[in-house]
Image (cartoon, rainbow, N blue to C red; front, side):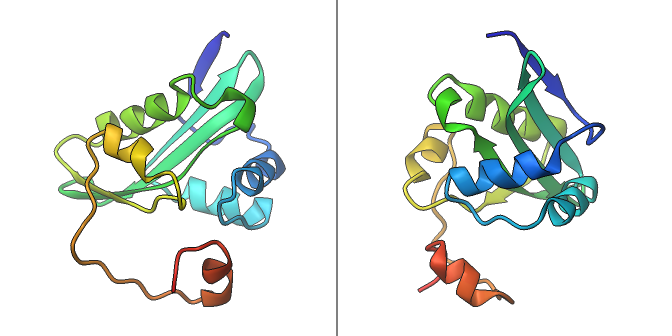
Length: 140
């Protein structure tokens, strides 16, 4: 495996991003929506094996003390090889001094706990597309 990291959105196949998110059971939108979300993020990380996109993630941040991590996904055939950890660590290192929040796909909490993330006692959200979020297990 010859991993290459990319920290910009140049040349990304956004339909592949959408398909990967669907494949791993995460909320997905059209390629155009994902393109907009990644382009408007503070930091992005794309991981390639040669020229094949195998993982990605993004962070939004004020650059001072708060950040949130979104859309961390690794294609199923490449999971368990440290790629998700690499993505998360790259995001954290790119925004030093910040606290990080994230959503975890149901069943993936242990992955983030191994990276020192902890469950919060409080948290609230306003979901404008509650049916889609409910279908993915993010709301009651």
